[in-house]
Length: 283
Image 1 (cartoon, rainbow, N blue to C red):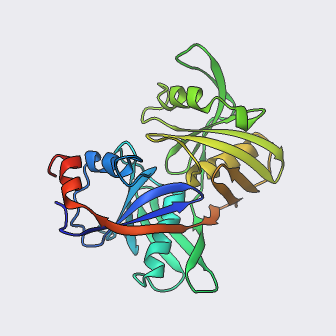
Image 2: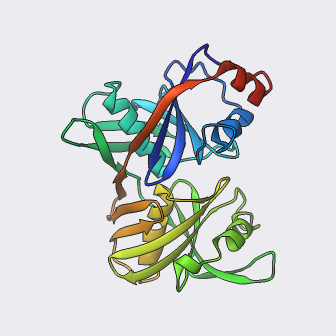
């Protein structure tokens, strides 16, 4: 079902943008067609994904649930940039009091600490992403076109394959990205990152996001880049990850990993009922 008035808020974290729908009553049916229509940058609102902010799931001790969908309508476990925008949304509106928001995600509950500007509004957040799970380091894979790449895999609650390149600006993101995303060794697909490491405190990266394509930033992707750079011996465990959309600060401790970055609201409005019915086939 669709409520009579469906408000939306356009948000982004370091250029990774989303259509946020507040649905604390869990009344909204969000089929893949609706997600694809909302994310369409010409016929819809436009975004890398849709975030439905719902009530925490049964048995989960959290403030809200982040129901995240990729732009192609597929469900994703977690979004490190998206979770910051959720925290900003509920903290700025007093839905959650204080500066720490507990967000239920499909990759576990994330504790998000909000940082406020002089006007009291949230400008950025630090997210406890949980401990990364390193996979293989330096594995050579043969792609569908016959070329080979060397990858380091990391799970941040969702899968990542990281490739070290000489020049990230010239990396074949749009060729290798989709080939590796769908590689047979990744049963559910994978996000693909390309990194250059100029010094031990800096990583430059680009990401091909599973189910989306190239995005300007990714919180889990930036985390995976930092972890992979450390695993291959090129970087320390505290780095600034420079992405096309901005900088994320990553701190990988013995127990967990923290990401600090911006959270921005762009605009708010109401989804037109007729457009919704047409875009979703009357859902």
